[in-house]
Structures are given as structure tokens and as C-alpha cells.
Length: 456
Image (cartoon, rainbow, N blue to C red; front, side):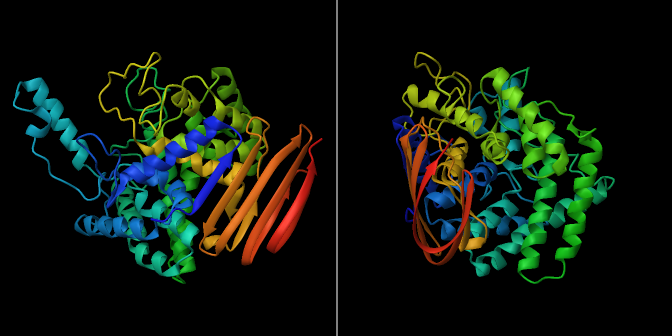
């Protein structure tokens, strides 16, 4: 897994965060993408692998690694009519592993629940790893062969949930079963690891997204069935809108609910601005995000894509709890499983399931590649890209190198003074970039370009 992505800024704490994400990936990518390398678990949880997969692809050449994991996944799916277990490969642990030798009834019941969670399946968005990981890998490596061999994972999962939907009344919603949803978010007034966002809303949005990805993959692979999946995706989106969108507003008042509706285009274009305004107010009023594994992956992309660039930087650079820099201030050298894995004063959180080396929240680094470094694929394999770095004086400069499947991109920008930024962009052979800068958009082919930008 050669390292292919490098990003450096003029902010030492941000640089420490970049290092923390990379080392949590290195520590956990051993044969399978484990959730943590140090406790008696070290399992290939699909949800953790899914939310981090895009960031992993920016950091390293992980195509072969993920293809092996997807091969293992399909072997499990093949036994289960397309269903995706929470853990790949699956296991069948002895109940004594969780109850020990103490078989009092309350401990035994708790142990049974833990074992059931380990062995269960069909939980969104964990199971959606079957569609999202292949797609993210394909967007980075551009390899049609890899997409073709992993298409069976994608199709098997989607066909399975469509069949379950049919059996459960054909609501075009994934409104049944158990789902982790926005795991470990901070917005549940009752506490605990489950977020406040309606789990059936989350699962239904991912149902839509997974079906849409299968349609896109099928079209690229020249399979006529792409039309069927596209129409199915539209039916699901319509059903989500009928249940969860009222008068153009998302009727679930959580940051994650708004993020998903905007990111996955559940909202119509004319509805986005009023919902982004609500999201902005929620973050500003709280002073921080309160999202879990689901919302955190996309929240900064949603802000940056909708003219809230400064707020996205505020989220990244927040030094108080909860935040990545807060973890740095408390001594973190890898990514934590919980926002409060370590408490103020340096004491460990006494809750169970607490790891100091768990890459899921490290997905923020994907946003940093896209919006600080400034590179985002338009075509699979990065043959065509958008280069749109977002400037902020608090990080002074950014140096990015990304050795894509098509060759190495380089993007370097720095503040000359508070009103001027210099930018150098290097585009590899046979590639094209749309460079989006303040008051200027330039279409560039391979070569090196320099820009001097006045900000005001």
C-alpha cells in the first residue's frame, strides 16, 4: 500500500491531524480494514471501512487491499442471498468470550446482545460498504476491470434489500430491521451510542444511494439493467421526500439529517439554501458539530459546496470539545473512536468500547484533500479533475501532492499578504483540470501553471 497522497499546511495542529489519520490507517490496514489494532476486537467492521474508504484512497494505493476485502465480502454475501454482515469476514464467537466465567443472568443477556450485534447483517450504512467501497475505489483507480469484478457485490446487496422491501410492503424505504445509522453522534438527549437521527431515514437515504451507484456502475459496464436501477432509485427518492420533506424542509431536526438530504440530493435545488441556513444556524448556535459516523463524513463537503467555506474551516479548527484539534490538544497521535475518548484533564472515558486508534472520524482528511489541497475527481482515475482550493489565513499555506492513477498532481498555495494568494498547479500528462479560483475559472491541460490572486 504505497503512500500516494501528501498534504502539508502552515498550521502545526492541522499537520498533526493529517499524521494522526494516516497512522490510524496504517495501523488498521492489516489484511483486513480493522476498526482498531489494540483491543481484543480487531474486526473488519463494514461501516468503519465504508466511511473511511475515500480518505484511504487519497492516502495510499489501496485498490488491491480493498479488492481482497470485497472478495471476502462477496463470499459472505454468496451464503446469505446478497446480505452483508456487519463484519467481514464473519465470526461465531463463544458466548464465554463476552460473559467470561460469570454466568449470572444479567451478564449472560448482555453477552448475548454483544454476540448478536457481531453476527447480525443488513444494517445500514454498514452493509452499504458493498456499493460505496467499490465505487470510491473506482473513482480513484479508474480501473473498469476492478469495477466489473466488484459489481457482483454491489448488485447482490441492492437486489437483496429490494427483495426485503417487497416483502415488507414495498414502501420504497428501508423502514424495517436494525440499523446503526449515525453511530456515536452526540445529539441523542438520552445518551448512548445511537444518534438522534431517525435510523430509518438514514437507512432509506443509503438505500437510495446504493441503488443509484449500482445504476451508475451498470451503465459504465454497458448493462441494460442500469435503467431498472435508475428508476428504482427515483422511486426511493420520491418515497423519502414524501415522508421526510415537508414544504421544502427536512422534518428531522438534526445536523446529520440535513447533511444527508443536501449531500445525496434528496432536496431539490430550490430547497437547498433554506436547509443549509438551518444547518449553519445549528452549528453556530452549538459552537460545534454533533454528528456521528454518518454525518461527519459529509458535513464539511456540504458546507464548502454551499458557500460556507469559513464555517467548514471553523469546524475543522475548533479547539474545544468535540473536535479533531481538541484531541490534538489532549495529546492524540492517532484518531479516537469517540469524540470524548479522553476527558479533560487526561482521564480516559469510562464508557465501554473506547479506542484511541480508530480511523472512522479520520474521514475529515478526505475533505482536506478536496478543499484545502483542492483536488477532486470529475472522471474516474483523476483524468479530469476540479482544482478548487479554499483559502484560509489560519493555515497560511497548503502543499499537496497526489500520485493519481494518471500521474502526480501538485497544488501549492500560500498567502503573500492578507489580500493576496500565490498558487502553483502541476497537471500530469494527458489530464485536464478546471481550476476554480476567486473571480476566475480556467480550463487547463497538462503542464505547470502559476496564478497570483487578489482576494478582495
